[in-house]
Length: 171
Image 1 (spheres, helix red, strand yellow):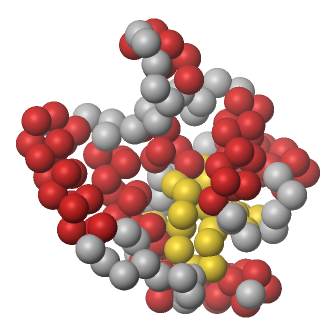
Image 2 (cartoon, one colour):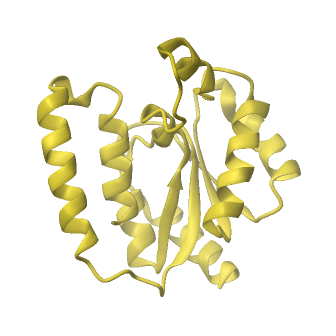
């Protein structure tokens, strides 16, 4: 599946689009369809870390430029990917509301497991989480491109050039 499809399905896990049974039906149908696709092995594997973007077209542009987001960090947390015996345990495994160091541990593990070559770190200009960018760069061990969003809208030309340069460096 594409990074954008992954992003959208995971974000929808936050409320199952208001109908968990219908969401499950559609998700199972999508997964069956996606399994029939030929895997793309020519894409640079990147991780998308940080808040889900308000900038439209970001995942699609990554794909057009030859990269695939193989990890959508916060969106993945919406799906609560760690099996637990109780709902309380499930929420305790949810890393986003805790300190950055809980998130960093999860990011490190997933970056290694998925063979990620670089990280796109998306932050909102009005969000305190920008300080996490400094910690991420110091601790993660792979190149990081930080993108900052300030309002909803399409991906701008400057950001496209920065993404292309980052991907060229990763290649």
